Length: 146
View 1: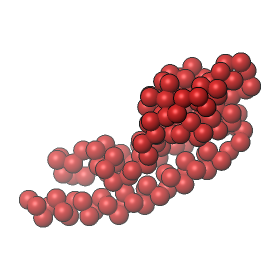
View 2: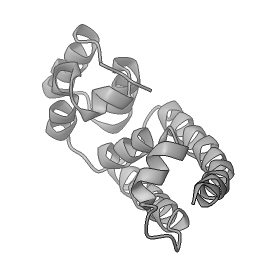
View 3: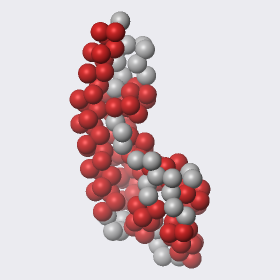
View 4: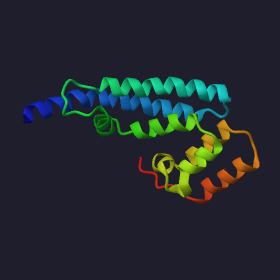
């Protein structure tokens, strides 16, 4: 029993480390984009959603005691940040505002205000709504966990 747990942990540790390195790199690359269109967001969201599906399938083992979602959270520390990025790429300004939730929402748990600011500037036209959100991102620090 204990031996099986150790083997399962080892089998998930190495691929988890590789997947974590990959998703961190993808997050950094997306955050480096200065401007992208709605089509770019849609395309990125589709491609990154495929990676999310791959991750869940890859961590699915024949062992019914191992939940792939739990394994991903345990062995891929950047997984939730990556999933949040996928959500944001398919969002409008109001969705971003709601997910930020005054620095206390799910977006704020995984991204800093500066990171969200970069995404908002890259994704949305310069409007009064965008300016108000950017101001809030600057005013309200996040509860950023990762």
